[in-house]
Length: 449
Ligand SMILES: Cc1ncc(COP(=O)(O)O)c(C=O)c1O
Image (cartoon, rainbow, N blue to C red; front, side, top):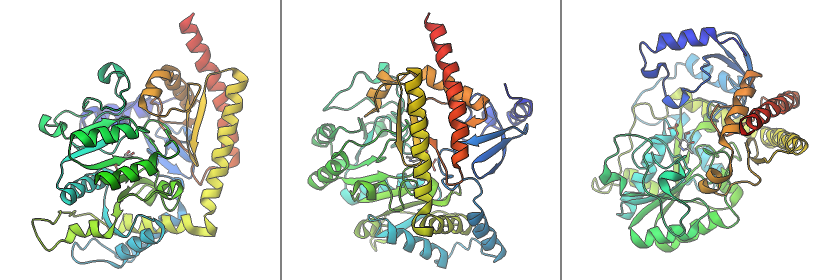
């Protein structure tokens, strides 16, 4: 067991001033570890313990912590006395928008916000304004932020939503108190990879938008089946709803053009955050110019309000430009490196699982992976909820943390390799995984017998 006395002390102190002692409540997970420093693939806690990091702060650190190139760009804007002026445009926001339009097929025009939640909120509001409709479709097992339209039906126990229905929808199960029932009835959660339910909901309600992560990456790595994303595109064209891809987690991590460019499907609107600026707070809403122009429609009745004191603040904007420059360097070397490491970790884990006779599957897209304790890759939340061994998953994660490999201690959470990881980091990780897995499985067998 690692010594975490200082972490415990800090948490007890912070509890006096912060509810629960931790901001952003999803960070409050046992074991309580207070981190103090991050560099490259490593993070250190306040007790001085070192960890190889695969959590990446819920995935933004695709280049690794404090990437020197990005840090330099941030220091430079501060040294140059760039500031937040809050009036008029800036050279930097234009440069970032241009880079995104150049590389993201769906991006004809770009707006900038601070967080993924703000961006998905604006995307949905824009879709309602464009269509004059109010209902939205989202995915059971998807996460698109904290606001009223989407704060629901994530890892919902099947006892609350019942067995899979197709075509059909699931009852609204909030993940936050305070969402008015009138609002809840506008939101329809269906399963990922289920086109029939999209049509079903659209025939019952007047649907403004469908929002989905192109890969469900808040319950591991749940990939679209062949034809699913293009099927959504066809249904959007036929039924008139706005197709929104939430690429907050997939965007820039899997490709400079977003996962949509890999899938070769162009949504109407797309949202980015996280890896866009390698850990600095900025998000982007991009899409069809005719749609995005609603933010500047001359008619006040048609115009959608998009405003924010800190939007395109120079620090995160500089970080985003530098991150994109890094991603483009040497013809996409970052992607080749992370793919090689991702492949190595997947192969290594598969060998370990096989040798140990464990029922497990590694799902992976590039640098993002998840070990499921089930015999196939899940296709939706129901598949996962029915087949995955959540208890062993959590035990495995906690044992890895004890061994200096930091993965988020919550079952099914995505693990992320960064450009700063090395082949020897992966080798070390696999050795620790083998030991942790053996312990987790022995403990699980002990419970059963
Ligand atoms: C797919 C997806 N969309 C939206 C969000 C919300 O982003 P933020 O936490 O920056 O508000 C997240 C956050 O994890 C996410 O994973």
